Length: 270
Image (tube, rainbow, N blue to C red):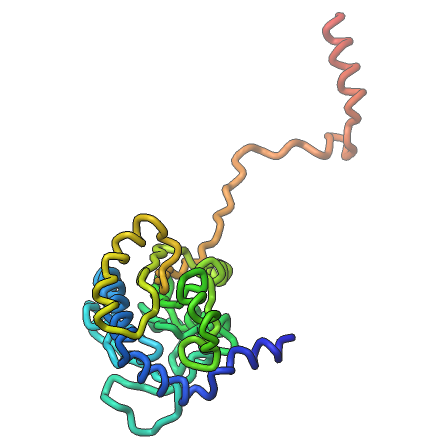
C-alpha cells in the first residue's frame, strides 16, 4: 500500500520534469492569474513575521514570494542537484531532506511543495526540524474541494502538471502540523474562478473572487495555511507545603485507627 501511494505521488514524473512543466504552466494565462493572487496572499502576512533567516522551498512561478519580507537573509531552494545556481540566493536540495541546520530558520515558505512529493509528511518534519521555536511556516496548496478538482476529473488531465499532483485538503495539512507541535495561526482560501486558460475570460470573471469569499469561502482553488512552531515547555511541579502525616508512632509502630478513636471517646466520657 505504501509503495502504491508513493507511485501515485510520482505519476507526474521526475522532480526535474515537474519543475520544468510547472514553470511553463505558470507562464500560461491561468498560471499568471494564480501567481498574482498567491503573491498578494503571501505579501499580506509575511511582513508581520520577523527573524534573521527565511527559506522558500521551490520557485515554480519564477516569482519572489518573499520580496515583502523584512527578514534580511532570504534563500530559495530548488529541487535538484545543479551545481551552478540561477542567482546568488539559490540553493539546491530535496524538500524531504533540507540542506539546512536544525533550529536555524525563522520562516519557511512552501509554495505547492506537498502536492508533488511522495512523502509530504516528511517535508513537514523537515520544516519542523529546521525551524526555531516560535518560527513560522507559510504553506500554499491546491484545494481538492473546489472547481479545480472537478475540472481535473472532467477533463482527464491526470498526467499533466499541476493536475497530476496529489491535492491535499486543508484539514489534513492542519492535522499534520498540529501533530508536529504547530499552532495554526491562519487559514485562507483564494482563487474562486474556474481554471480557464483564457486571459480575457479570467478578467471578466474576477468578480467571482468577491462573491466566493462571501458565499462559498471553502471552495477556493488554492489555500494558504500559516502555522507557528510551538515552544516545548516543562510543567512546573508545585512544592508541597503541608507537612506530611505521621506514619510511625512513638513506639515505632503505626497506631491503629480504631484504637485512637476509642481512646478519644474514653477521654470525653471522663
